[in-house]
Amino acid sequence: MNLKERYQKEIIPKMIAKFGYKNVMAVPRLVKVVLNSGVGRNAKDKAFIDSVVSSLERISGQKPILTKAKQSISAFKTRKGMTLGVAVTLRNKRMYDFVDKLVDITFPRIRDFRGISQQQVDNHGNLAVGFKEHIAFPEIKADEAENIHGLGVCLSTTAKNREQGLELFKLLGFPFRADETEPKAGKIKKK
Image (cartoon, rainbow, N blue to C red; front, side):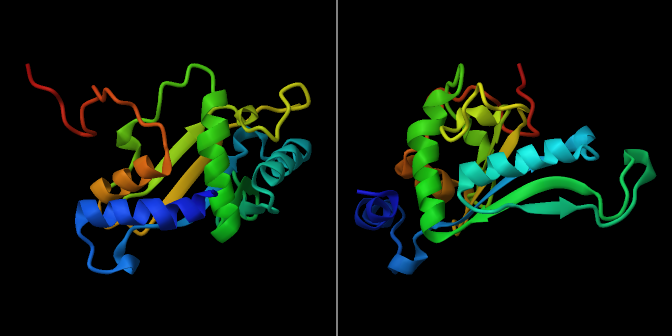
């Protein structure tokens, strides 16, 4: 059973039971997944940008777009129209296939992975995960990768708050840390 079928048959009834939605359409669902990678100081290196584009294309199965600078900023040494990053937006079938692969294959391949912090789910129920190395994905062979770069994955949902989004991601199978000892962002523990 793929992820979309599991969402419709198992996750929707569990979410309705927990939160008491009146309508099936009110249940939070995934809307899109955005993969992006900044090129940073290699912005003038065409070969590096091409390698990032090809790796994102292999990971997502879709052609990425180049994100360009909208204006020149001399402090950052950027000029208008300069390539700053590469991004891909996945929706529908490709999105579900990618999330399934992310949970079942990619997370277990990360070195010293202890789970995702629950603090990475924002107040609107969206999740952002960063990878230091793109070689955690099964499409990338570590010995063939000439340039290792970071990668950001943002999963957008229709959840109304953090609690609903967190529950949706837990039911989708995301490995969250069981023992959250981190303080909430912006709050300092008092002794």
